Image (cartoon, rainbow, N blue to C red; front, side, top):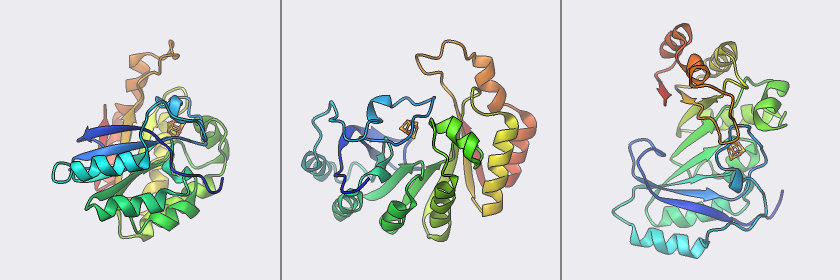
Length: 237
Ligand code: SF4
């Protein structure tokens, strides 16, 4: 995975939920190495695919030039932005326009995160499952290199950057005990912000019930533990 240029899959021009307490544009980059069973962005998964949108790097920069004073931040999301070798350069150009830089990532490529961590102002790191090879593979469609996720977490922890960890609570993949395990790992590492995200069944999932989706995120013992363990914790529905 080398020399991949930045390919923009789509852009959300105005968001108040993708960067804490900031108004942001979200740049969805094309390409992701994973195949999470709960993915809502499957059109962005294929690496090297030509996206349906006509967004180019120049069109993005022109758009951001015009939005100065309206938007505070630009969040690079995906796919997984760490796929793209040209990302640090694009971040520099966006930063030069005066924007704060956000990053949404699964942390699969720590060497790229290391290159750009000084450029970002905030990051959201997905922790898909307990950091055990088989469980991670189940949640990501085959990815077992949990060491890479731990390295990415360590890069963020040792930086001065604000960041959160979050887990999508898909009851087909995770149990309450799994969330306890993830939370214990994060707590021991010194993570301050952790969020649970409700699973919204993807269109092809006709079996998972609302009750099952809520069972994980409404488990009282779990929620009490998470509230005590992190300076900031919330369930996102
Ligand atoms: S990491 Fe994100 S974009 Fe990639 S497959 Fe998983 S949910 Fe989809």
